[in-house]
Image (tube, rainbow, N blue to C red; front, side, top):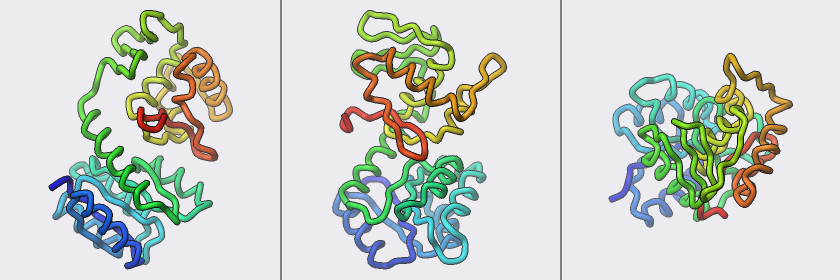
Length: 230
C-alpha cells in the first residue's frame, strides 16, 4: 500500500472520481467534505498528502491550508489545491500559504495522479537539505555557489544563483514571484516584483541548453521542470 491521501471536496462525484483513480494506483484514501473535518482528519490520520478543494462550505480551502501550515506538527503535510479556472488570485494565495501544487477544474484524473506522484516524490527527496543538486549535466553546488554544465562553469550573479537553487531544489513546484523574491532578497540583494522577470530572463540565457527547464506560469510565477515534463 502506498501513501495515505486525504481528499477534501464537497462534490461527492468528484470525490468518488479522485478516490477511484488514487486507489487504482495503490494509494490509501480518506475523505472529507468540510474544512473542519479535514483539519480533524489530518490531525488523527496523518495523511502524507491532501487534495484540497478551495471552495468548501464553512471554512474554505485557503483557511484550511493556512491553519495546517501554522501547526508545527502538521505543517509538513503536502497539499495539492483544486481550483476553478480563472482563480489566479486564490492560486497565488494558496501557494504563498505553503501549498505544493494546484490543479484546475475540470481536470484529468491521470494528470492529478501524476501531480500526486510528483509532489510525494519531491517531498521525500528534499526532506533533508542538499548541498549539491545534479540534474543531468547541470550541477549546482551550494557550498561553492557554483553552477556547472558538464565541465563549464556558468557565471551567475548571487541573485541568479539563489533563484536557480530555489527553483531546481523542488522541480515541478510552482513558486510565486513573492516567494522567489523572499528567497533571494537579503542585505546585499534588493529584488522587487517588476525585476524578478529580468533576473529570470538573464538566468535562462546563461543556462543555455537548460534554459527551457524554467517555465513561466502565467499570472503566478515560475517552476523548474522535472525530467519527465521535458
